[in-house]
Image: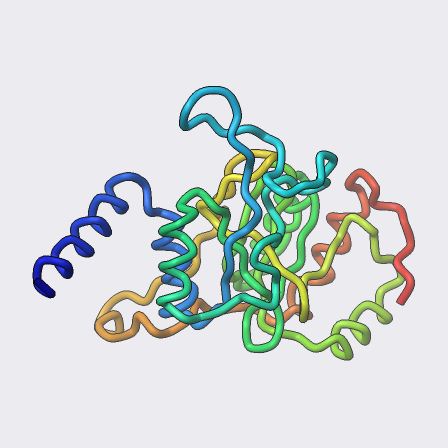
Length: 238
């Protein structure tokens, strides 16, 4: 009887993968291979016929500013690297966005309007700066960086003459949405996918998290690119 139940469980998992388990796979990679704490986002409410997805948030707020792309139930403090919990969440909510809880030992991030993000990446490439993963939504781009403290960030920002309000920081107590999530503004994708280990080191290297740049290496270019973006002229109090 145990063998039959085990086979049934494996069969359900295989069927789930064929039915679209990309988010579960992404969440498990983050949580178990990279040790990045994740949790499901609020997601989008159903709309119209069966299987259709609306653009409104599934949370109770009818005027939600970031539809689908925020924690709701569970809350941010529930973010985990436990594979069993991750499997349970996305087995029950397979279309839920994948949220990364930033800070601590996990990556932090800087985000800016999409057009400014493209300019910033081009400038960083010309300068020969090595980039880490870059997440793209239809409206904003997010650069993942190595964990930083509020003190370190404060020092870097204080050295800037001008910090546009369109440039946002995701550190301790924050979160970002990761591919292949779908949110109110559309599909989330990798503009620059996490670097993969190749060659002789590839075998057994799955546990190595993607390389991340230091925040100080990318901040100047992001500030410069954001200054010309919409809402780029507001002064950020240090």
